[in-house]
Image (cartoon, rainbow, N blue to C red; front, side, top):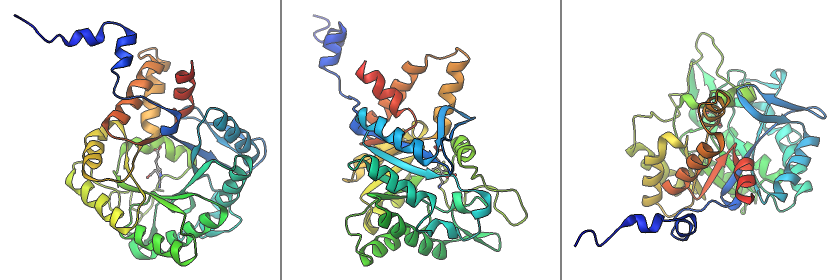
Length: 330
Ligand code: PBG
């Protein structure tokens, strides 16, 4: 008799489909990226990221209270630094009264149980728009790592729960972990951007922070000497293994949708929590197609975020976090 098994029985109606559903999104899965600027009452829309804003500290406070109401309890903070504070060494990054350090305090004051993660990399502070220090046309690894470790301690001092190094220097997780331990920040975690690819999907983010590499003689025009080559898979395992050995608490794959093979492989290989960053370009593509009326915004958004979780992400940094959670509630 044919067929004994009819898979369509389990798709008969929405109730049965939801009964057998394997992947369920929850507000707990999301990390909300936030862009912070100086000033008062500033809410600037990022032109390549429709409906996403840079916020001054007063509005940041309102924003995190609103996030908490939606049960979104983890944020990842980025700052836009004014040009006059930028230099090659990212000196401003370790200013105890810098914008990042103040932002952490504002968030912790407004919502004490908000988990605050801070971006650790020099690019927003670099006059060259690079994640590390430039010397003779090259990004110098070890000097950069030492500054990232100082920066991490400064963020921990301000109250960050996790530092999130996004720079891809070699050995920086160990350098940061040791510095945190030495300074007594034993409970400050590290979310390592372990498999971060040199991707063309970061363009809108660089608009948001005005942090794109500048054009100039002896300035590398891209980040390919430190971020990973997207032709590679095995290398992502090696990078992740090293970060775990050096003390990473959470590892990340970035970008998201074009790298789900890597996400699944990392999830299957390691036993630490895996984060995925659904990056600015992924956000922008959905927004643009929806604006043209070519795609159903909410449907594509939910499908892609769910696919990221299904691939193995325990948590997702996403500019869609609020939109998704509002839809889950409705
Ligand atoms: C830089 C950094 C980037 C992103 C997060 N941290 C951009 C880059 O590497 O040039 C990208 C995030 C996004 O595109 O949403 N350290």
